Image 1 (cartoon, rainbow, N blue to C red):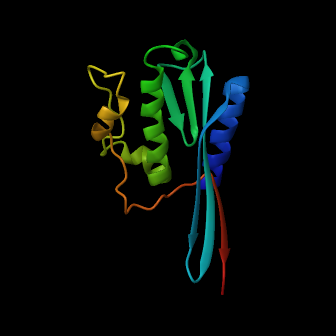
Image 2: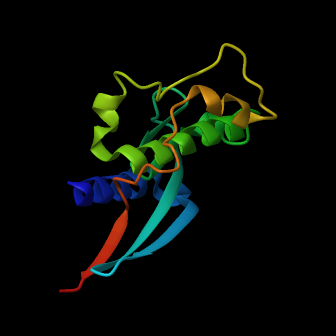
Length: 145
């Protein structure tokens, strides 16, 4: 199922974003235990579209921002907010959708401090440091024994 999410998020980025697709962030990881070696790659695709309802949306590793926000004062704020959703997807995988019914995954303040978008992070759910990621864009695993 995670493979489907990866493919769909990549296709969304290419299909909707066209020539506006940028790789915003690369997260690379490596884990080793006596029985397996795992490497993963998590790019985040950001693109702009005129067809976006609202200001922005996120699906897996794809962040779509409405074209009217490009260069606007609140563009950095919106991007920061959507990057939190990408981190939530990594932590929850497909459980993101049912979790949105009980966890504060979405939060928009009445007043935004555009100069310091990270001030509002405390109001959105983020995974604790001990929480393992449930989803990776690309995961390669070698099992021994």
